Image 1 (cartoon, rainbow, N blue to C red):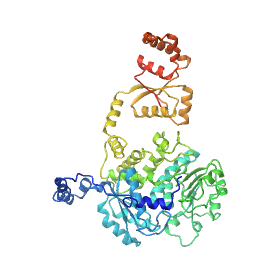
Image 2: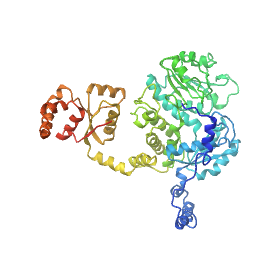
Image 3: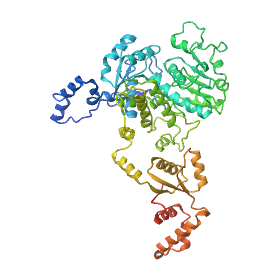
Image 4: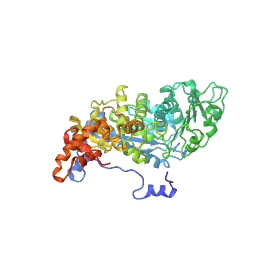
Length: 554
């Protein structure tokens, strides 16, 4: 991981135009007519339409693609209560992530107010501007009350990402880690170290996914939260345990299956990890220093399944995997809320994505060749281009099914293409090419079938219906490689051109080639030797009509 210096960070934020975001016009503005349409007198027409029907604001303004990132600066990253103005660079950064990953516009709004009632009133007063509100970096327990009341009093999606973003991503990771470990969520013992907003939300979502309340132990700065402790607030009281035999973290994790850390660095020791159950799941999410380092956790025992919040280690739990796409699906259905059904849909979509073959663009970004579902990859990478479609569509469907959608999507394939176009992943030309290919899939020879890139390309092409692949190569080696890469070869023909069963075809091809090139001095023996080479054999498949095309050259 590249070390970030103070000087580099300050220069990044100050060089050129200060800050990280700007407002960009989306309509022509160079002529007098353009300006008359944009402002006076043309702007009066949409104003009058909105006056008649407030919902038309989604049609005539950016409301439907505009999110407010709002904070009072009381819990900024790992910096604590640094104030609203000091938190502005973080809010701008959040706006940047919304835009580059979800195509969503953002106004960052820093409210210099710690009083809960006054803060809520300020947010409610500006809410008509926006299609959604992302609460950010507000300390607990005030954040619970603020979010609860705003969700109840506003008719647009409101989400405190510090709570629910981490909960959604870690829940997806937990489902997959449990699958890798061969355990069931309703049976595992879970220890949660930390009782702040994120920890509470994570634990509640784990319960919604099936975790048993009695199997959860939560700790705060004073130790295990037990029912006999005095002065507990309502939230902590809910997670208090009746057990009297545990008081410390070391005692709590002994025999546990899952550790979730949202507390402070270096509080979980190697001995504690060794005391956990077989195939322990350790989510050490304190930033920038986790509860136990990745190196120490992996050195403590070989069967540990590890996640951190850091990008330089496997299985990063990163909120950017969730919030841009959750809001994308909510905005596109003009949802009145982000409810539990939508959050659970996001969890399952993210978990499912990690089990699918990984695109080369992701492998290349992390300088690997074969990311596959397992101990080192059970959470999708933030750069995965499929997140925009898989998660946004799942959230949009859940919004419609749960009754909070004001706009219904009927053509899901068109919506999928819209999302891809929004992020520059495709355009009308590529869509036309795909559609043409799907109407009449050709038999395409993939010459280097034994190479991972060629094999993945063939499987992807088959899955998308754009051709009927034929792989050339040793069938046993191809099947072994497919198993290693977790690729399905169902419906894909494999031709082992050097196998004895292909002898008759090699001879037939050799006669045709020798006759075809006789005037260039070719003879049968030379032609027959060429039939043991993939490119010659593949081109003869095309020449004789056994295939329509050949794809060769890595």
